[in-house]
Image 1 (spheres, rainbow, N blue to C red):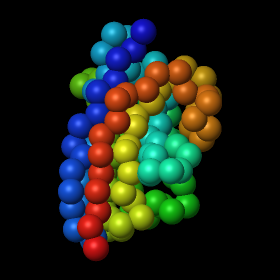
Image 2: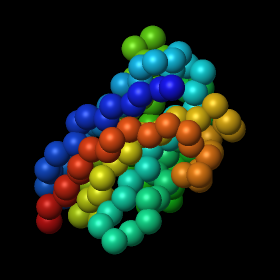
Image 3: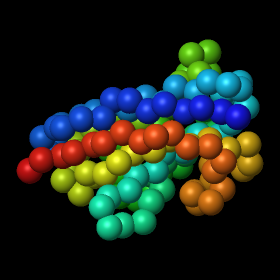
Image 4: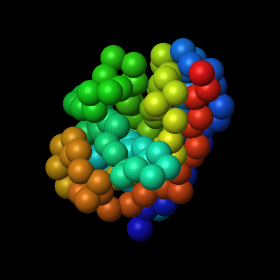
Length: 124
């Protein structure tokens, strides 16, 4: 199995920035595609971004495109989500997830392992 631990969430004002981290253990991180998802109260867990194994291909959901950047450091077994120009509607629990299948899969059903989530709250 792979264990994932997110960190970096917190409370920020609209327009601010946060950098989320996802540390993987148990298996070789570079063998996995990584994605970020978020879930607001009363809503479905939605796709945010994904990055392929080598880090050269990324894909973003339209609401975050141009504001968020997904990246990874396979030497450190860590993935990142840099979030800039945050909006109140970005408020959610953010989860990282990995899978051995696909390139930049966008469905939550395609991911095999999930972190515990980290809360991001953006105030107006």
